[in-house]
Length: 378
Image 1 (cartoon, rainbow, N blue to C red):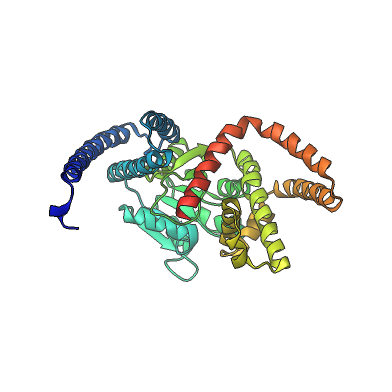
Image 2: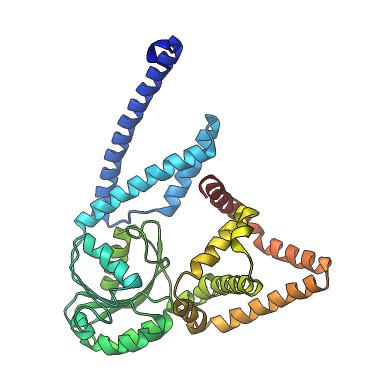
């Protein structure tokens, strides 16, 4: 249909829409100018680029305002998710440009998390000295000549590597690790690093993917040296991380829940599917969003390295106790299913529901957002 044949009122409406779109662009430009001002203040005050509580509270306000204007939740959520992401990126750029530079040596910096850290820090102008099994300078040399020395090797050899390289770290430098258990590596670093070398234990709670640490959590455990701890904390936060301070003991106990229990459950589910020789492709034709999400997580795990998950399940000192409880609960439900004991299932379900009731609103909100996104984009 030619423009000349269009109804006049449609042309008028299109002109009005185009005008509003131009106004939106102007508003977005003003918003980005304000974001740059925010970033400069944060850089001056040493504040992180990401504030989860502030962002979540603002989104709740915007969703409520959207309801008042009869706007769909998913439209408001999608638009502001993109705006928030652009805001965080701009803040990270400003913070990174103003960050103090120092040399970073990464032991195990050619694969996995070590390679990811090398890429992120190197792209931002830090002098990165990365070595691996078959690449880079010897580990002792890397440890001796850098201001921050990061141990990023597999869990099962972390303590051994720490003991080998820690004596070479220069006075005034900081030694840190990125392992998913904290007590043993932190103890090894404290024991093997000379006096005058600071020590920090860290655990990035995410895999080595993405542009940087945007919205990701990193656990920090104090070892030795307050200045070094603050420097490491600021380094992670500059690239968008949300940092959480914990003792090594609390960290390992929490990881038994967050990693050991969840990964063991996922591994058991994958093992059952393999035992059944289930037709996974066909099952997806029938799949609910929850099943698709669960199957995606199972597939994700089994696309990675067996040794990583074996270490997570077997090295954490809290793992055997949680695994035993998992076994007991699985056996309880297995017996109920075998005996068609509906009452036992209902009884235990209600006990758990009572325990979970304070989390119900949060869980509903989180799971709704995940499932809605999967339905729309999956």
